[in-house]
Image (tube, rainbow over all chains, first blue to last red; front, side, top):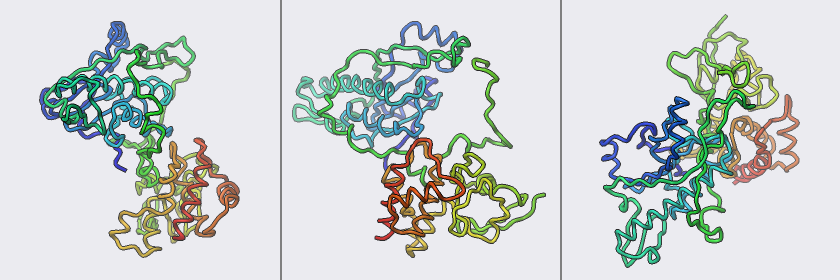
Amino acid sequence: MSVKTETSVDFPLTKAITRRGFVKMGGALFVSFAVPAEFSALAAENNSSLDPSHLASWLEIRSDNTILVRTGRAETGTGMSGYYPQAVAEELRVRPETISLLMGDTDKTPDGGYSAGFLSGMNNLRKVAAYTYQALLDLAAKQLGVPIFGITVTDGIVSGGGKSISYGQLVAGQHLDLKIPVTGEFAKAAPGKWVGVDGLGGLTVTGDPPMKPLNQCKVMGTSFPVPGIPDKVTGKTQWSCDVTLPRMLHARMILPERLGQP
Amino acid sequence: MASELTLSVNGAKQVVSAAPETPLIFVLRNELKLSGPRLGCGMAQCGACSVLLDGEEIRTCITPVSYAVGKQVTTIEGLPAVWAAEKKLSSADAAKTLHPVQQAWIDEQVPQCGYCQSGMMIAAVQLLAKNPNPTVGQIKDAFTNTPPSPHLCRCGTYAAIIDAVQRAAKAMKA
């Protein structure tokens, strides 16, 4: 299995990318969400570590042709670590094996809201990829000097006017930002609500980017192995109860006496 | 009172210091760092903690560590070596070969959360050792009616488990 679930070249989402880090990456297209004004105020009010104005990206196309997808959702066994790359690969016209997925790390991924990976999460990512594809086509049209309608993309190689260029080459040496329109809200404590928390819906990508018609899909609808399964069957997977911290003698989950209690 | 106990786990001799009545699972997980056996219910009612003891499935959450002294303990981490020994694989081949049950679990994409699957695979290995060509009925029976309890999977992967056991049976005969 060549599918990775995270990448070694990484940095915390909440920190600005350092100049050195950027140079090391050799250029990239960062796809993040356009932050509605109320989000910044909300984040400040919650004293959240997730300052949305610093959110780097949902998707990164890097000059070495790697593609990193960040999602706040976590793989709990429903297979989203397999079908998220499938959905993104479909819209970007790349192989799903070329996508690295970083999941659930609250310091490195956008707020994923509650656990509903398929219904909202995949649709979000698919739209993000669709917007990104349009941006890449624009970029390619300019660099190749051909109109968009004369461009085809296969496995991440853009061809047009007798010339070909990879996504990585398209973004090389540049720091490109693409903002995706979103709606929604961040999670916050809400003692009056029945679960004590509000805003679990996370973010929803809005707008209607051109999406691949289902009858043209080559990746979605085909079998794609879930990346974590080999580790599960060999005893390597670490669940939260397998985590030990330095000098830890014993650990257990402490739950509040009642809902909404801090 | 802790005492020194000598265990044989996945083919290796292990000397541990533990009270004899300590449940085997805590010795395997905490002392020997084998995270394959998983603590589920803690009262032999789910099967997540199963290992093989001299080839027979036991529930390590209720088995005192002293009971394993002098016997061979096999966890899922040790299954590839069991198969390699059985097929007399070279060390190069052994290093890249899983037990056919584990391989079938991958090929059939059985695990969802995966928490119970160590015990499921242990049960499958025991079943196929006794019955190399089980019918669907016999597979269901083995996972359901073997004391002390059925093997439970809250994700509901049972249908995939049946497919994987059949696939493993075929592979083991090849």
